[in-house]
Image (cartoon, rainbow, N blue to C red; front, side, top):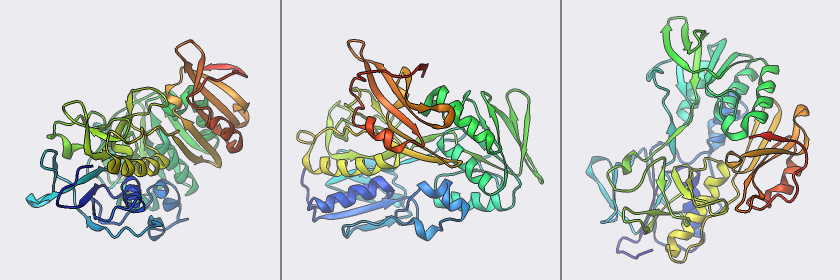
Length: 413
């Protein structure tokens, strides 16, 4: 990292990745100023419980605050949305025309919910869930509802459906994919999770999109492509996310589905080289994980945000020539209707799925996701476990390596 007179590292984003980067900077002996710039008015908090414990009442907003084990001694600019970046002058553009110079920059601005075309943007009955304020609004909507519609069969949508059932609400879940968690788990395990939701009273409309919306004093009606109408008192839309890169659009940087980074997490400049002094971390970063290949991808997992934030801090101080590539084994988990779903690696890269242990019918199983290596040997790129945490550990270290034996039956991924 180049040294300038400001002696300041700016961190755009006060979520988990930004906080992890700031803490690691202090651990590594950075004694200069750290300026934390966050759009929300709150200090860093854990978003994971927003779709679960917060809506069930198991946890309250004060319980969600994230803590560090190292004193940050940071300057906080909360309620401040970054407006732009001058790469050449090393300045952040902030509201009101303010320019904040920096020596180093960590971009951890995260993501925001993707808007479903046609869905009401400003409604007391239709919500998206990303922030603490969103969760409070959804909680109030659930308190006055009997029937809830959830649009989106990914992890957020599935967890919200579970939470609503815990609150004894009628739930209809709608997704354009033929199975729940289709991209993350594939059709076979996705169908197993779908059966789990049906057994717990969730009505599923799968393989059908949303055609339109209407609202009245009694609730909201979701119009489906097959002509069916779903009436609900409230609806939650969870159809994915969009990287928060709007403030970088005029920089010349590649912000196609997140900000493009080198394997080290250094941001790639318009000249095609990694930029010394600017790194990115967390959901907003798109980088090649060389454990798998050289294709840049984003990973939106809690653990990845922590690990990438810490690695980005190290890379920032070391510089692009000396920093190591960031090559994690991505990991995530989810609890749905009492079943623990865990994943390691990138199952979505698999072309085949093999049952490695157990039986999906019992919902206690481990599935391996493979793709052919250069010589045709199956390479293990991911594994998913249903209520089998210890068995999954046996395969975690094998991610990215040949699967020596392929037991069980082979199913299409």
